[in-house]
Image (cartoon, rainbow, N blue to C red):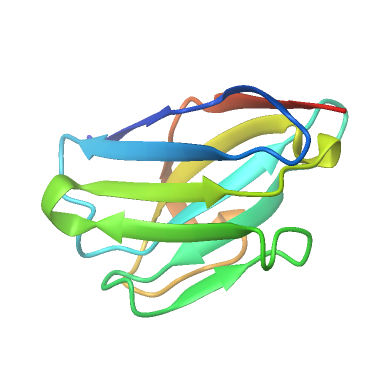
Length: 124
């Protein structure tokens, strides 16, 4: 059973940066697409970013394009989300997910395993 563990969340001022990490255990994530989603209180889960198995293709949600960067290190079974120019609207719980195939997916239906989430809070 694959387990995903996110880390790196916290409290940051608007305009600041954070780097989220997600490490997979109990299996290898190297052959699968990976993604990041977020959910704010009272809102639906939102797609943030996705990356294919090799790291050669990425996709971003409109609200984070140009500010966030997804990357991966298959040797470490890890995926990262570098978040720059953070805004209060980015405040949410951020979830890492492992896809069901090698490609990238932009909807939650394309993912089989989910982490517990890490909280990101951006103050104004």
